Length: 163
Image (spheres, rainbow, N blue to C red):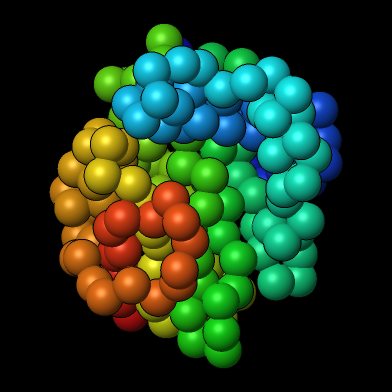
């Protein structure tokens, strides 16, 4: 089986299903770690609806979907942060597909998409408990930087030159 990565409208059924899977996983991880429970279903629905991903639409953003053997398996998005910087968002691979090279492929495709948007630098934020993500970014040449936002869930900030 092989991977493919292609742009996807942020509001397509495939993108919506991947956003739901991503948000459910990261939200449940946070609540289990900090409160010993999973995400309240009503809260999950409110948060998913509040962040549809329109910022990942052209001309200032791109949403990418990875397929493994033709089946949707992961996602990554980029959005312009300022004139020369883009932000990496929603990097996710379904659990059964992990360890097969999809995440690095998605991040590299997102870097190419950021370059196409005119960015010379890519930034991202993540949480401390997302150790797999932090290890992936370090392997791909991202370095920890000072905070660039005040997102209450962000605990680590990374950047990478795209030139």
